[in-house]
Amino acid sequence: MQTSSSHPLAGKRILFVGIGFYDYEAAIQSRLEDFGASVWHFLEQPRWHQSSLLRRIGSALGIRIAASRERYHRRLLKRIASVEFDYVFVIKGELLSEDFISRLKAGNRGARFVLYQWDSIRRVPGVARLLPYFDRVLSFDRRDCLQRPDFVFRPLFYRDPPGEPGQEPPTYDLSFIGWLHSDRLSRLLELEAEFRGLGLRTYIYLYTGIGTYLRHLIRGRHRPLHFRRLPFVEVAKVMAASKCILDLPHAEQNGLTMRTIEAIGMRRKLVTTNMDIVNYDFFDRQNILPVERLDAGEIAAFVGIGSRPLPQSVLRGYGLDNWLAEVFEFSSVSEWQPQRP
Image 1 (cartoon, one colour):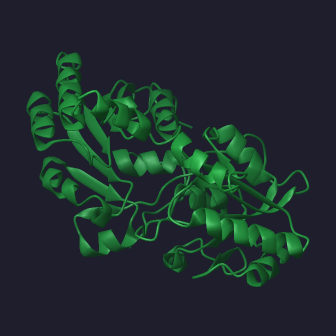
Image 2 (tube, one colour; image 1 turned 180 degrees about the horizontal axis):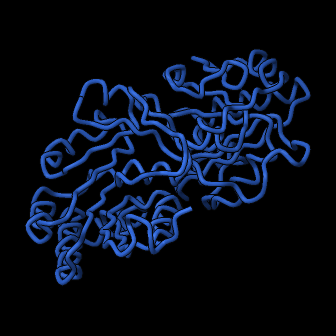
């Protein structure tokens, strides 16, 4: 096993510009630092921009969001002006201007610029203007990689759960944790009621903003809604206590969600509305049920059958270390081979 001093990233300086997606970026940074790298991590926009409520308040006070973001980028460039980076690593990059990237490139001519697309290109079309600035572009979207041969196909990752999964009897037959968007609430409430009628147990946790919560509170549909995002440790506990994980990706998203990969990593059965999952090397109809609509009877029958273990070589390939190995192009310790889209 490589020590941090002998790792290819030991001593490397990495500028990491992310989107503030839960605690995943903290996990990425922590692991890079375990390898001996020095990491400067910043968000692509001021953190308060992530709150729709604070953005509305800012607009009411006459603050222009675009101008605020430009000032933030100028301050960021000043803060890192004295550092010569070995890598500039960007996730998504939707809110970065071409001027910002070009200035970053000019100040770090020896750095390798790497972009990871954590979304489908059709949902972030503006990022196309930034692609020429990057030496390497990876995407979690298989179809995007088929259409763009210059993209490297790399699905998302799972983190090792705290403790061995599967040691305790399951508390839930089916669980779902995620953002409230589109028609998720109606679909989940309907499925929960049908599962209850079948004598099955569910766990549903949807997070949303206070305005949306209050609207649903008035309508008496607030029970599964919460303000707080669950940290990974709590998510892992729920998944470990579940027979099966439900995945309801955005209708315009083709790449596999983080929750999908986490379910694979925790050896849990999975029901997903992403039909593209049949094209992945871990797909097994005994473990994964792709559905176009949620049918409680079909899902209940699937939950009731046993699962089949995955080969360790396939399972390890989706771990965080292997994800970082492919993003930063260093040797990994597993038998993982990059997938063809």
